[in-house]
Amino acid sequence: MIPVAENMKQQHGGALHEELDHDAYTYAMQLVSFSVLPMTLRVAVEVGLLNLISASGSHLSADEITARLETSNSLASPIIERILRLLCSYSILTFSSSTDAQGRSIVRYGAAPVCRYLALTRMETPSLPLSS
Image (tube, rainbow, N blue to C red; front, side, top):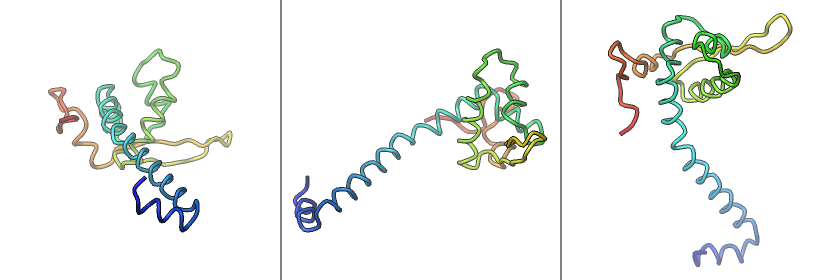
């Protein structure tokens, strides 16, 4: 530990240690998350999620999107739901919530303005590079 931090720890007990530990944890989470968006965005583009949502012109649920992808993977809908939620947190997609007749919450996803730059063009390449 650096001398200044050690001195402050002795003066203030364990409070500084907890703060330094929290800061280190927060920084570690930031480092891990740096790779999450690019990898998730690449998958969303390659699978066609952004094109499908952009082309629909309306908000779609994860189940509706999964059905349009015509996959046989039974785990596809929850995986797609996680991808869509992450993209919403970065304002790449928008969302709206409603309740169905049985009282279940339904989340539908739509394209945010930035989506048009990330969706595939007619030549099947994204308008912007997905990695450097």
